[in-house]
Length: 270
Image 1 (spheres, rainbow, N blue to C red):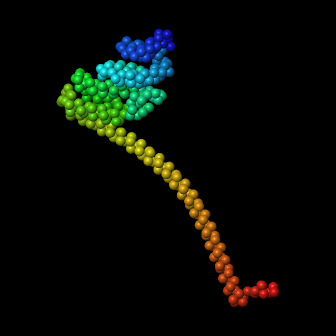
Image 2 (cartoon, rainbow, N blue to C red):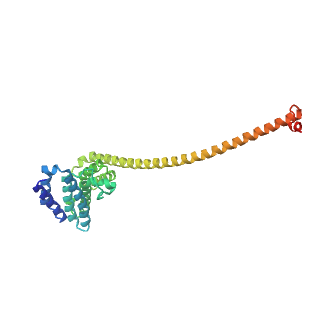
């Protein structure tokens, strides 16, 4: 890595740690991301993403008590940073949980999570500043992106937000209302079905897992019980067979003695 790129990366990291969220820092980021040196170093790119995920979580916690305007400025900065570094990799460790619906998988979508936070902040502030109103198209786009990334419940909520825009008459071209509303409803239905399907699949998997364990346990119990029962029956059968043979032999001897056909060996010996 060239000295110039190394210095730019160090400057960017230092600015983030100092909580300086300005346009100059965005330009520094854009500069070294475009360099061939940086593109050829996967390890450095991965480290940068992990650094931003950790720092973004701390930053969000730090600004919790700040004004909505302040939060929006910082979240917008973070959204731009994550969009630039292309935070869509799958090789992430469990360092943050910015998007609670899918736990550690959400780490791969930090930019999406921050966009959601920004939209919610704007929606909250819009009650006093109409310029911050979130349009149906923004909610619809966000819903589509959420669904594409597997966040079905969030996509459903975004669709509901988009439909609410029409109920509140927050629309620019009423002539397209019917078409757009139908599109949003279909997307919402897909999100609901997808969420339900995943839930059913999870429940089914758990059911079959428990059923397999139960069957294995029962089969083991039945096998031992059957072995024990069969052995007992076999022994009892042998006893009955011996007893029957003994009775038959005694009965035969008595008949022979009564008919005189068989000499009495005890009398002969005397």
